[in-house]
Amino acid sequence: MIGLLLMVALGGFSQVHSSAELRSFESSPLLIERIPSSPWRRFNKGHVLGEVLEVDGQQFQVKTSSRGTYITRTPDATPSVKLSSGKVVQLSWDREEVRRKLELLFKLDSQERWVFCARNARIFTIEETTLCLMDANVDGKFDLLEDAWSSAPGTAIQGIEAELALGANQVEIVELASDGSSLKALVQPLVGTPPQLDALIEINHLRQGEGLPALKLNQELSSACSAHARYLLANKWDGESDPGDQDPRALGGSREGLLAARNSKILALPPREAVIKLWSNLSGRLALISPSLREVGLSEIDAQVSVIDISSPATQRTQSRHGLSRVVLSPAPGAVDQPTAYFQLRGSMPTGVAMTGGPPILMCWQDPDAEILSYSAKLRRGGPRGAVTPLRELKTENEARGIRGFLPLRPLASGASYHVTHEVLVDGVKHEFEASFRTR
Image (tube, rainbow, N blue to C red; front, side):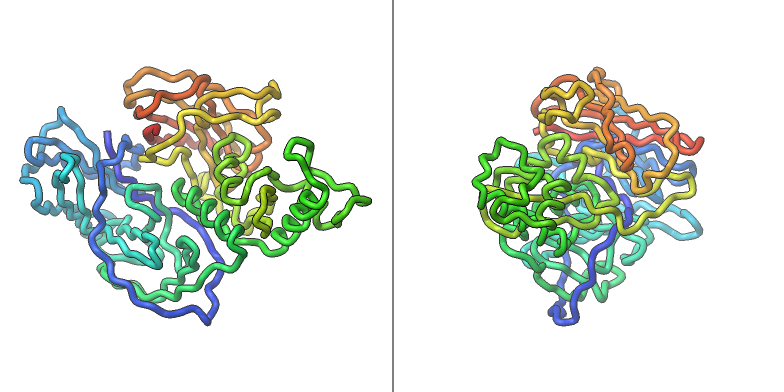
């Protein structure tokens, strides 16, 4: 089953300097290179469009709500509209006293894969980096406050902001055509050493793939991280002994370096490789995936030592009417190429032993003060009616940071589709979220 999730979210980034270059960019309709796998999220009543389209004998169902739009294959459904491959279909309905319109085109590509083009989605290229804009509320126009964007077609998305981190650049959108055909933006390179930028770009790429806001480089934290990295190099750290302290009598010892030593993730790898390693193990991923995280400290030197401080507190918190805000699911709905296993570092489980299992199934939210009365998740292979995969509840200090999750007891199958149902009771209100992903 397939789905394109258009979901509005909150986020933030730092302001672009006035010295940035103002440039104009043109867009083209967004072409999704596959129908990505994802069942529905359960919508609020009264906000669902359930049209079934038949395109050259293949059935697709379109659902939309104030949260987003999904397209899935439904081979057994009775179609309400029949059309030929390559023809545009327009769906329209009323919601909140506004006439909504959604235009879609389906066709087979050269490899006999179904692709579709949404007239309410546009794609830009800015400094060789992709920016996908979505008319998420399907009101027929693009708006910085109401709609959404992603860094790649078919990936998790977040609310359009005036300032965005795109690759190695900070982009401030100053003008956006209501039809999404063009925009004007101030483009300025991010500040940092090449190793810092390589690591920061990788962190933001991974977070944006989960629908999380980009991080900015905290110069004060980075200075401390660099001081501790130089200390480790000067004292010939072997990569095995505990790097989380300093001897004040040793060469290069400093107060700021000691603070970074105690707060940071430290790996015997260059910065970008260190980020990838952190993302692939449980404790590192939990630290990087927090929706409220806004800044990061990165050591500036290009060496086989990386010091990464992701301990900074949130700069802003928002809370919804029911005590649950800025919900992020991981893996993100429609995610592909997901790992089949994660290595869990010692101390990350109650037993304190190293073990291998499936990737963590996580639900994160921005307000850790919300009262979570109960949380459960169910993982099935192949779809919502597939075989259940056994899970083990994740119990860590990250629960206080707004992260709950489960761990599959064994690695997942390669090249397989999985369906996740999250159920959470918050401040007496039940919430249910559904998503699917595919392993590499």
